[in-house]
Length: 353
Image (cartoon, rainbow, N blue to C red; front, side, top):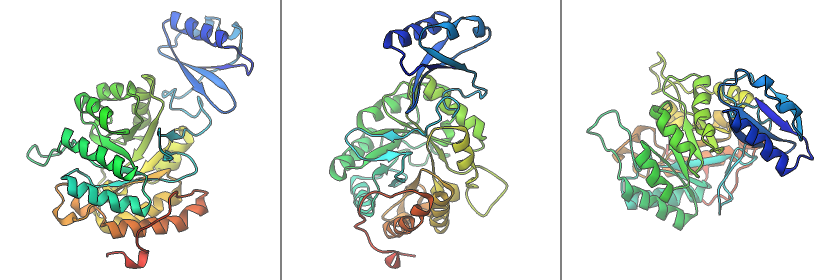
């Protein structure tokens, strides 16, 4: 349920509404838009119709939200959410198309800084790299942990990019808050509800990846877990789902992007690296993602993919990444998007095949 306040409502009237909601045993959440201020009410709302909120001073109207995801729903907030980062002009969800790029894993300081220099030169404003890696095999490389986070923090200091890295559990999440700028919840943890709640209490924005076989509603309900704890800065990510197809690692579901944008105000980006699992498919699907309206991309880039400790076959060479960015600059104006930064990388004709 949404309590829409009058334009002239006073802070005391808003506070009185929130106190009344809490006294009834529900939770109140402020929803600020460009044209209205509202208070979302969550909880078991059975019987709330008779609680007298409509007659309280400052209330304009009561809107019943039909979707199970109350805070995520576009019914609660018609305007698109734009994620902003302190001390950076990077955004996700606005007019500027966001690019998050970097290696799957932080493997060493030299490797990470080398990739960061190249993707920053090409125009990326956000850097990805796993300090903690959930792997199918317990014997595979699991990440460098705190040492990896320190390397990522050095990337931010040297190149000015915001850091996005995955939390595999609450302990890792706490460490990430000290070193990074955005918490990634991976596909395997999309329904790890205790981790989602912890991320919801974090001051950092959250990038939430779609689960391996999750429906759109399940993805949106996972985002609701985060937002219900107070964190309004959530970005959705389509990264492919498991199907019967065997021509790619996963099936990248581009149709989910406009569907999510119709139902939710949250930004949604696309990860064609995991969505395809094959280097030669990444750029075509990245361009298609931009064309279909995604708010950004997450791309894996490695300076020596053949020796990568994880996901080498789907990682672009830096020259390929720079070529992709140049192609995006040609496509994005057609969908009323911009790409910030002046590229200092190479042209598409120089890209490594």
